[in-house]
Amino acid sequence: MLVDFLIEEDRFEKILFPNKKFASSLYKKLPTKYYDFLGKKEVKAKIKRVPLGN
Image 1 (cartoon, rainbow, N blue to C red):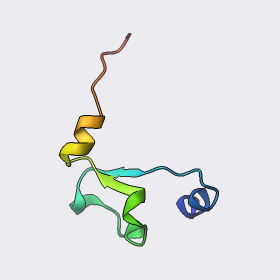
Image 2 (cartoon, rainbow, N blue to C red):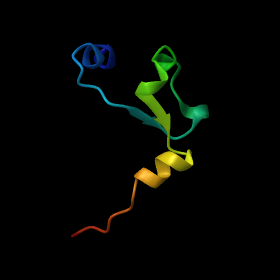
Image 3 (cartoon, one colour):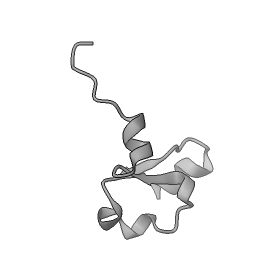
């Protein structure tokens, strides 16, 4: 319900799942622009590990 509300308010970007196996069935009705998987190379490239204190 919260995700639906945030989408309606244009305040929701994207939810990230570890992989397709662990994606909740509650989100299967969402358009693909609202979710992605951490295992994808494109997603990994956007997420960098930044050392603490920087």
